Image (cartoon, rainbow, N blue to C red; front, side):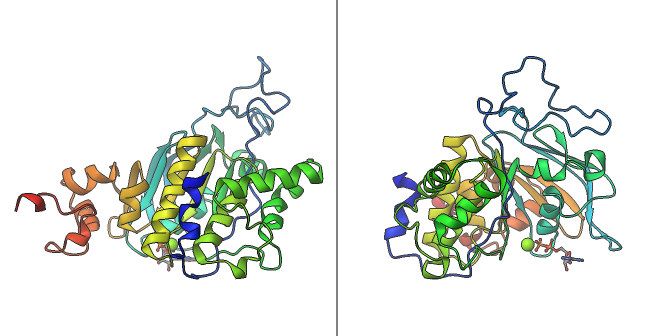
Length: 327
Ligand SMILES: Nc1ncnc2c1ncn2[C@@H]1O[C@H](COP(=O)(O)OP(=O)(O)O)[C@@H](O)[C@H]1O
Ligand SMILES: [Mg+2]
C-alpha cells in the first residue's frame, strides 16, 4: 500500500477545501460472498421481469459491464436539454473520464448516472441492471453497486476517519462491530491512511480528506466509483498522488472509475478512455484515449479542449506539444 500513501508524508499536501464526501452507497458483494453467488440457475444479470429488480443482491457478476449508457438526454426538469443522445460504456477496471469545459453538463450527467436525476429519454444500466427498472423501485439496491465522491461534498466532521468509513458498513451490512472496524481499517490502508484512523477530517490536508472519502466510497466493495473533479483545490503534487491512487485501485482491484474532470494533467495520467462533452453541440463530440483525442483525432473540439492553453503554449499538451522536441 505504500504507493498509495507515498505523498502523505511528503508535507506537500497543503490544506485544501473540505474533503469530498461519499454517500453511504455502494455494495457489490463479491461473487463468492453472496449467498446465491454460485447458484447455476440464477437469473441473468439483465433480468427485467415485471416488477423485479433483476437478480437478487449478491449475484451481480464482477465481470458484468459496470456502466452502459444509451441515448440519454441530460437536463433538469423544466429546463433545456444540456446533452443529447449520450451513449458510452465503462468496462471492468477501466478509468473513463467525462471531460469538457466548465458548464457543459459534466456534473449534471453524473447526477443522472447515479440516479439523482432522471432523464426523459435513454437508458442507464449498472452491472447489467436498468437503473430505473420498475420506475425506480430498485434504485436503492442498485446504488449499492457503486460509490460516489461528489465535488464539494464533505466527510462527517464530527466523526474520525475510522468512524466515517465504518458508517456505511454499520448501516448496510450485518457485520459485527469487530469486523466493521477491521474492514474500515483495511479501506483506510488501501488509500494510504493507515495510522490516521483517529484523526478528525478537519485536522487533515485536502488530499488526505479526499483519500478518506475514497476509502469511504470503497467501504461496501463497489465495482465502480464515480469521482467528480477529484483534483479540485489540490496542488499539483497532491493531485498527482491522487491520480496514482486511482490507477492503483483500478489495476489492483479491477475497480472501474468514471472521473469527471477538466484537469488535463490528471486526464493524461489516469484516464484510459475519454468522453468529451461540448456545450455548443450539446452532446458527446469525441471518445477515445486522451492521447488519440489530443494528438491524432483531428476533431476540432478535442483539439480545442486539449490545446486550451493556446497554440503556442505547451501547457496545453501534457507531456509536451507534439513535435516540440524536433523543433
Ligand atoms: N440544479 C440545477 N437546476 C437547473 N440547472 C442547473 C442545476 N445545476 C446546474 N445547472 C445548470 O446546468 C448547466 C451545466 O452545469 P454542470 O453540470 O454543473 O456543468 P459542469 O459540471 O460541466 O461544470 C449549467 O448551465 C448550470 O447552470
Ligand atoms: Mg461540475
